[in-house]
Each structure stands twice: as C-alpha cells, then as structure tokens.
Length: 124
Image (cartoon, helix red, strand yellow):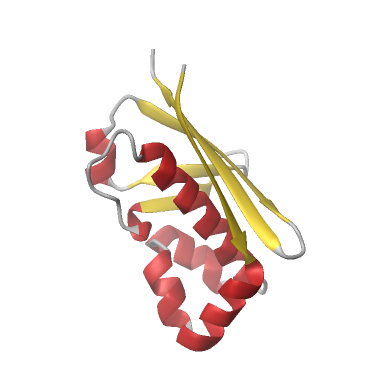
C-alpha cells in the first residue's frame, strides 16, 4: 500500500553551472560511493547529476513524514537494480528507521530538465 510520494524537478543548466563553479566537490557532496563510481564513467555528468538530485529530493520529500531529520544526500543513493531500472539504496541508519518501507522510483530527462518521483510502500 502506498504511504507517501515525493516529486522533484531540476534544471540541468543549474547543475552545469554548479559543476563549473565547484568542480568535483559538488558531485562528491551529492553522490554516495556507488553513484560516484557510475558518475566517474559518464560523459553526460550534468544530466546524470540532475537526475540523481531530482530523485534524492523526491525521496527526501517522501521520507519527510517518517523521519525527524533530513538525511544527507549521500545517505540516499540511486543505483541500477538487477533489471537496470533505478532503485533507491538507503544508508543503514535510514534503513533501520524505516525497516518496512520499499521505494518505487522513476527518473526522466528532457533537454532542459530532469524530474523524478518516489513512491514509498509499506511491506504487508
């Protein structure tokens, strides 16, 4: 049963500006270890980061009703699942707080924007 939903939209040009301004520090602050390994091999770095940021912000919005503290961006990773579709990988700390929740995630990219939606479901 769906318990919560989050949605976010990110302008890709804003991410390009942040990469130019802050370089790899920006990606390092936003990404977890698994995501960073994927990012390092991407040519479309701004597009990748925009999608990940949208997904993380959507996840934080969906998690908001369950948590009292906002998780760090690195505590929420978006990684390919066994089918290649994105899946949410939460840090152990966050996972322990929410042991019965599963996340469904979708990311989309257009020329100027990336968007993501996260739906949290509870195990039955």
